[in-house]
Every structure is written in C-alpha cells, then in structure tokens.
Length: 404
Image (cartoon, rainbow, N blue to C red; front, side):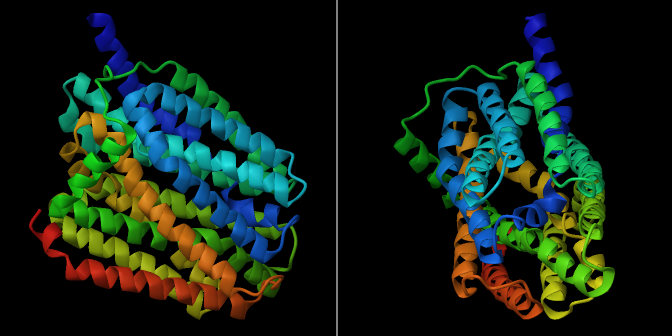
C-alpha cells in the first residue's frame, strides 16, 4: 500500500511538469509564417480546418479509450503523437506533408484533451486530496502557460535564424514529456466500461443537468472566441510587418513577443481565477472572460494598427481565468468511468463548431486570394458576429449558472 500511495503522490507532483513539457509550443508564433512558404492563405485556412476536423474524429474515441484502457497509456499515445507531428513538420516541403503533420498534431491534442484533467483528479482522489483540485489544477495551468510563454519567445528568436528551429525546440520538449509520462502510475483500476455507444448515451444524459448543459454551450462559444485571434493574429501581424516594420526577420520575433506576453498574462489569470471566483462570484468572472475575447476580435477586425496588439496580449487571459473554476464545477459532477469521455465530448463540440466556422470562412474567401487587410477584416468580422450570436444564446439560458 505505501508504494501505491507514493505512486499517486508522484502522479500529483509530476503532473504540472508533464503539462509544462508537452506545452512547449515554440511553433505557435511561426505557424503561418512557416506554412506560407509552401501554401496560400486559402490553403492555410484549409490546413487549420483539417486539423480541427481530425480532432473531431479522434476526440471522443480517445476519451473512451482513456476511460476503458487507462489514463497513463492515453497520455503516452498523445505525447508520442506530438513527437511524430513535430518531426513531420521539420521535413515539410509542401501541402501534403503539412496535412500529415496536422493529422498527428490533432491526434496528440485529442488524446491529451480531457485525459490530463481526469488523470489529475483521479490521482488526487486516490490520495484523498480531491478537495485540493481547483487550486492544484490552477497551479498546473499556470506552470503550463508559463512554459508556453517562454517557449514562444524562444521560438520567435530561434525562427529569426531558421523557422524550423521552433519545431525542433518543441520536439525536444515533447521527448522529455514522454519520459515523465512513462513514470506515471495508472491512478485507478478500470472498472467495466460500457460499450462505446452506451458510453456516449450515458455521457449525453449528463446534459440534463442545467449547470452542465450551460457550461457545455459556454465551452463551445468560448473555444471559438479564443481561437479566432489565435488563428489570425499571425496574418494580422504580417500585415503590420509589411506596413510598419519592414517585411523580413522581424515578423517571427514580433509574433513570439506578442504571444509570449499573452501566455504570461494567461499564467497570471490561471492563478487569479479561483481567487476572483471567491471574491466576485463565478458569473461575473465568466462575463469578464467573454467580454475580453469579443473585444480582442472586434479590435482586430476594425483597426489595422500596432496598438491593437495590446488587446492581443490578453488573448490567453480569459481562457486561463475560467479554466480551474469551470472544471471545479464540471469534473466532480461526473463519475470516473465517464469523466474523460464527457470532457472529450465537450472539447469535440467546441472544435467541431470551430472547424465548421473555418471551412465556411475558407469557402467565403476566393481561392488563391492574397493576404490583404480587407480580406482579413471581413473574416474577423464574420467570426465576431458568430460569437456574439452564441453569447446572446448563453445569456438567455443564464439562470443555470446564476443558480449554481
């Protein structure tokens, strides 16, 4: 027994550092810049839509795999997929290779999504410390975002020498993440899990609870609002680079600095989320998060100016602010055998909706269209309208969260 207990404690202690190692996304500030060497703007949007579509196909099966087979093996598969994806991107020479890389990247995120949170909660439960979940999850989120912040700054600097170096940094970090995951112990014995179809029905039945249903819809809207700036801030910066900075080596560095600052802001928000919830109440925290995301997209859509980057700095603040408080409500409502599947379903809904938005945007952008302000502004404006419609729907059904 003492050995098992120490294993659970090792899980809890190592989890934040696993998050840090697998969240070294040094490639974030150079994705568009790197891909644009091989593809057009329309093809870039299609590649991003393909990524989200692949996650859609893998998200729920990976959650079911986690509930049925185990958290540890699922994390090992996801981390290995990160390694393969980065290796493929390093060899990219055209659209087809980038498609392969996007598929493996989607697999990595799908297998990690939901399972990491479930693994953390299960490990704390086995150690009789589940009451510490909100604070510990907030700490892990803060460490992960800090790692990403440092990584994107390093990636932006390295990309000034060679854009591929950003992917190399992420590859090396993912390898270290694989070694950490290999030290994990499965936190709970797998009881008999229902068949895939029955598991989906059982998880869907949770949506009869008004609070879970509201958060499910909220996660969909916030996922889209958070990822619109992520997908289009590099094209936005590229236009600023052309207009104000002089096209050339400055673009990766500017991109890295912008996203790095946003990640540090997210790290601060991750630690503040639980405190703000206790002080102001969860509804106000969620309203602040949604308002900031809308303001970022509106600023990018309406004004082409370097001052708008001050808004982009806040891009990760809302998601990090709501991460731990939201999960602290959602996760305890779920039984262990359904936890990863349900969280995967929630992620799936957000990604599926956003993938549909990206496909729609790619179809509304003429094939071969070059990057210009009018095109980018139109794309961002359409995205903002879609997000505003979702928020209006959330407001209509806000009683569920007010009564939680």
